[in-house]
Structure formats: C-alpha cells, structure tokens
Amino acid sequence: MKQFLILFLLTSSLYGQSEYPQDYFRAPLDIPIVLSGTFGELRSTHFHAGLDIKTQQREGLKVYAAALGYISRIKISHFGYGKAIYITHPNGYTTVYGHLQKFSKRLEDYIKQCQYDKESYEVEVFPHSEELLIEPDEVIAYSGNTGGSGGPHLHFEIRDNLERTMNPLLFGIEVEDSTAPYVTAVFAYPKDENAIINGKNERVPLRLIPQKTDDYAVEKIKAYGNIGFGVTSNDKQDLAPNNNGVSNIQTFFNGNKSLEIDFKRISFDESKHIKRLVDYEYYVRKRSKIQKLFIEKNNPLSIYKDAYDKGYVKIEDSTASVYKMRIRDYNGNESWVVIPVDGEFETIKKDSTTIDRSKQSLVYSNKMSTLTSGNYTVNFYENTLYDDTYVDFNVSSDTIFLGNDNVAMQKNFYINYDLSNYKKEHQDKLYIARFYGNYKKPYYVSTSRKGDVLTAKTKALGTYALSMDTVPPTITPTNFTDKKWISNYRYLKLKIDDELTGISKYRATVNGKWILMEYDYKKNTLIHDFSDNIVKDTKNELKIIVTDNVGNSSTFEATFFRK
View: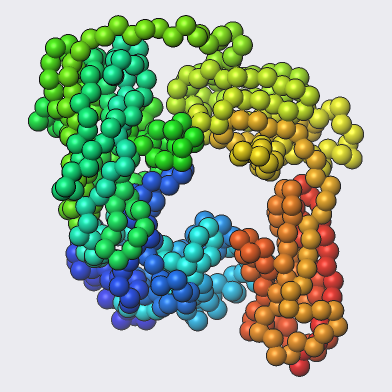
C-alpha cells in the first residue's frame, strides 16, 4: 500500500494537468471501440457527456480502469447512470463508468456494506483518497444496462479538475471513422421583423442538393437584412449504423469566418441550455434537432468561438453573397454546405390574420410573472424563460391550460392549486398531472403539499389537471409462491407496478431484517441475490412494502424455505 501511494504521488507530480495527455488513458473495454453515442451529441434535454461504447449487445464484459488512480465516488441510482464508478487520477482528471451491471468483488463487497448500513439500494459514497486505490488495467466492474440506459453499453467520461466533461477522443482513444458527416436539412432565420428570406419573415426551409462528393449545395435564396442559418446534421462511424453527433461546425460569409461551434468540453451547469442551441419549437413538433448557427440572447453556452456579430450575416440590397458551413467529425472527415444568397429587398405582404394578444398573458424572461385564475396560481420566477412569451392561459374547473409545450425553459416554473375546498382525508391522494402526447394521457408531475396548497414543478407548458390516485401499487412474485422451498434459487424475484403516479419507495425484510433488493424500473422488477448471505434461516418470513408517489401503500407477505 505504501509503495502504491508513493507511485501515485510521483505520478501526480510528473503529470500536472496538461492539455489532453496522449497515451495516458487506456480504453475501458478490451473489445474494438464502437460507439452508439458521441461526446456532445444532442439529446432531448442535454448534451451527451461522454462516449456510449457498444458492448456487442451483451452485459458482463470486463470494464478496466483507464489509468492509475483512486475511486473518489460510487453512485447507485434507479435512473441516470445506474451503477457508476468515478476514478480520480494523478494528472487531475476523473474517469466515469456508467450503467454497470456489477462491480469487481472488492468494490461489490464495499458498496453492499454501504447499502446494508444505510438500508437503501440507492447510495452515493465518496471514499477518501487512500481507501480504494486502483492499479492500471485493473478490472473494476462489468458492463450492464442499469439506470436510464436504453440497451447494454458502457457510458465512459473524462472530466477535468473543474468537473467539466471532455471529449475522451482528445486523449488518444481511437474509433474507426472514415465517413464524413451528413446533412439532412438546412434553414434560414430572420433576426428581426425587418429581415426577409424568400419573401417571408419567418424560418424558411431551404432546398438541399447533395453533390457527388460529401458536400451539399443549396438552391439560391433571396434575402435582405440580418439573417442566420440552421442545420440538421449527424455523423456515422465505420462499424455502427447509429446517427451520432458531429464534432465541429464552422460558418463563413463571403470567405470570412462567422462562427464556430466546437464540442470539446461542456460543463454540467451549461448542458441544460442545449435548448438555446437547437430550435426547440421545431424539435417538439418534428422531433428533429436543428442546430442554430447564431447566438440569441440568454445563451450562456461556452461551445462558441470566433462569433462575429453573433453568427448573423447582413444581406444588402442588390448584392451577391455566399454562406458556407463546414461540418466535421472528430477524425477530421468533413462536409461543406454552400448557400448562394442574392440580396433583394421585398415588401412583405402582411398577413390579414392577427393574434388577439388581449386573450393571452405575457410572461417575462427577466422578472417574476404570476398568473392566477380559479384555484390555480402559476409562478414564473426570474430567468425561467429565455424570451418574453405570450401564453394562452385559462382555467376550466380543475384543468389548467398553459399554451403549447414548445416554449424552451431555463428552469422549472410552479403550478399551485388551492385545496381548501377538498376534504382533508382526500388531500393526500391528490396530485397534478400533465396531459401529454396525441392521446393526452395523464402523467404524474413531481408534486408536494404545504398546508392546503398543492405545488407541481415542471419545465413544460401545456395542459395540466388536478387528479386523484387512491389505487395502491401491485406486488406479484414471479419465481416463487407462498410456503415454497427455494433452496436452489440464486435470486428472489417480484414484479411491482403503479399505474397512475409511479413507485416512490419500497422496503423488504426477511424475518424482520432488511434485505437489499435491486429495483429495475424498466422491467418493474425487484430482485434479491441470496449470495448476500443475509438469509440464513430455514423458515423465512418475507415482507415487502411498496409506496407510490401520493402515499398509497401495498404490503406483500409470504413464507419461503431454504436449506
């Protein structure tokens, strides 16, 4: 141990945190690195923070420490990264390994002791620097599909000493990629009411013309005033069909650089502002992400470089200009998009249809706004929205209508309902539901109650309603029955479910002693591993209590026997 610490300190002194040290980190798997997700890739609410490495549609592959270090954090959660390990290295970087199936034996023993001590499956611990030292090439875990994973894979990150995520490919980890990014759509945007694009003052789709090379031409447009452009683009690596993210986008106007977007490093604090990069309204309607190649107000993203006039270009009357996009993946493969622009002033014919703003409510972006009607009060605190927004707001009985859900939000707003007209015995079963999708199915929204006021927090406008849940969760054994001998069983398995508000918590005991049960929300399963060696008696009384998000509880009891 002492020799290991000396080696760690020596390595730390030799490797101050330099710019992307090469050949320091090894790949975390010993199979070819094939990606289902790239760093900086556009997700629905955030930028992807690492690499999603395919595990050949299997679980249980050995996961190796990327370098010498110590485990600085272990987190197990039902959602997110599921089972995750964080290793801090002498050069100041931290590597992260997520969606793991299980840990190596010594780490598994360590974390299970923590779980039993806290009587909780979900735990987060921060071992001190000498507690769990990791050697180079040490097997630390096995790949899995835990947490919010949509299929077996390993999520791998590299973070700097400020907890900012970095593209792991910058550190010499290689992925086969000889294919240029591809473009599926291009758009032009007016900056203000004085800008004109093909006779319109609105977002305009442009006709994309693929060339025989990896490049694209765009049908000539007529424009006037300050305009910006947007692009929908993705990349594919050689060994996978996945539509992954690109690494870099540059724009040029008449040969001069206008803007660069570089996905090298993204902090967690700014990741939520992806809604300012993409056209959020278009994404909600079409489920397609347009990357806006201009910077609007209230955009704190650090991924921009060389932004001249915020990426907008000024088109004068009677001019001929050329706007270009250069789109690259990490391996340097690139595609160009060329847009010829003729400057031509046009008088826009005004639409005779006008919006009656008197029936809408203005919600400000830079100060608090409060909407009140019936039993509802809605609070938008300062900087909840990116832009001042008119909202169709009205209340009918216990249903509240808050316009469309295509408005981008920086943070939660709060829907409050006065419950004083409801009987006290009913108040605990009430919650606020959001009606979502084409069929307007109600979904539980995180709800709390203080006195007679029920409060839901959310980042989406739309339709909400007061709802009641009096139905307790269901608990069903799947591999045993009451009074059964299960001596040869490795696992005890049950299925739990709650139709309306979802599972909030659960607790399982055998003969009055707490037992660890892993909860997989994707399969609605609870599983106990008898190798924990907690269940030692022949006759065993199992008791499981499951509670939903409004407090309805169900209790399951059974007897089983083991030798």
